[in-house]
Length: 510
Image (cartoon, rainbow, N blue to C red):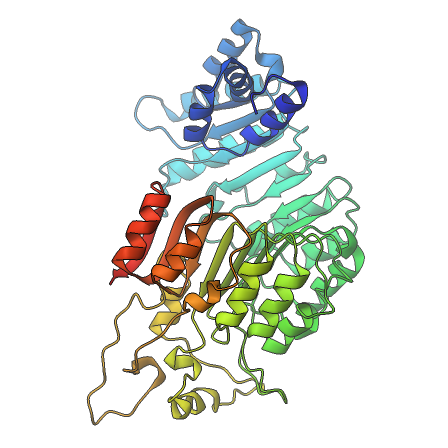
């Protein structure tokens, strides 16, 4: 795409906003059209410290570019040493006054570079004042991004947020300890923007009150409630009210959610859903089977993240995230681009083969922990498996405590056996976390039916890559990152010759 045609220019302008600075600088060198588009896009975002903002605005005005500014990225960190407190506050207020005279600003991103976890009183005072002045000067904002700003810089009264009534996207505080003050401020902000709000990334500050307010938002589509304490009733209310238009739902680490609400996240209630994140949600495997089976067709799902469910005993003995779920995902999620499965012990070569052989648009695949893991009841370890699954919890669910390898398995760049096992002494009883039995990963049989997708940005499998695996993977047109347990020297040389820029993060070379 050379960027010469109007259609190509429009697409490039949209794409550039998602690229990092290094990639943008590389795009400038392609041709004259790209250089012009990148320059225009960079001009639209004023990125500076709040004390340097008047100089930057004067530069834009001198070049005749002030009318093209659409976004403002401001560093509000305290600069110590050369200004008195009164002079510092005056400079900040003057900068905010100048910003209020730039009518095109619609996006505000606030961050505080170098502000440590225990800020001083001067840092807090100057930061709170800067954020308050900026919010008061820009009542026309449509996007507010505070994700890189410490929560300590939020004004406890929240008076500066009252003037924002046209917000469409909110990214709330993620740095520092969020308390009820920030949660209450987010609830007030959502309540005053229900008619225009489209996306909320509030994470731990999302409450039941926020979800009930979002039920009245006619344009709402995306929710990130990672680590929040929302309950089943509030989530069900939101799904019933706005489920037909939701495209993104991130519920990872929402420990209060149960099967009662998760079981209703079906294509019938969420027909347009594109992103679903259920990592670390405490549900049983039959809940996953209710969401992903032969009858549930997800036409638009592009990003899916799951973690092993709490073990249970069903009549079919389907105690884990198993091959049936993966076969259903491979057949009923045709547009899936990213699939991440952690701690799923019930997956075998057949399930992995169903994913690789059916999903042609797949770009990221992470599958950690295999069925023959000693913790998961491999052949010859029935006694260990019974020990793990025979301890009932008070609520009737059977819970398995994670081992050290379960924790390491959640890190995509490391294989599941990154921590070496230390065999127990002969007199010590056998335990799941100290099993001396060697762990086995996926084999080349998972690739015997081929790989339908031709491009992978990330392939992280609990697998020992041999020459047969390398021959299958060498047929890909692009492979950026390959992670795994073991790789043979012949397979490594074959893949390096085919993909010289591929990063191989494999723990052992055999």
